Length: 131
Image (tube, rainbow, N blue to C red; front, side):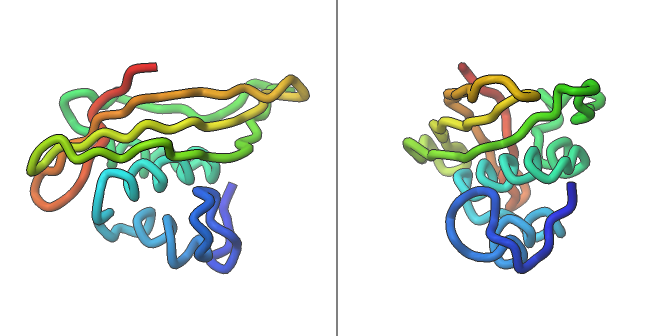
């Protein structure tokens, strides 16, 4: 679902979407792994599968990604909490976070993830994750 540039950014940092994750969705390079991770969370909220694929490293990226929910099973994203951002090398970093969501009218779920990122050609990419 599209979001107005002046709406609060789904990542929770505070600036309006257009000044926060929206600029990365429009093509600007994220300055670090945490910004990329936050922009990927916002892409899930806004249903931007193209951005998710483009920001996924080619060696681990799936051939396709569908964000279409089954009827009556709409995913409602409830929030993001970044626990830690750690630089592990000149062009590598890790981000630990918890994302909260609800499917359909069900209970809220907390998804904890430890994600790895790499920088190539001046751009950060999501590499993989451990739950």
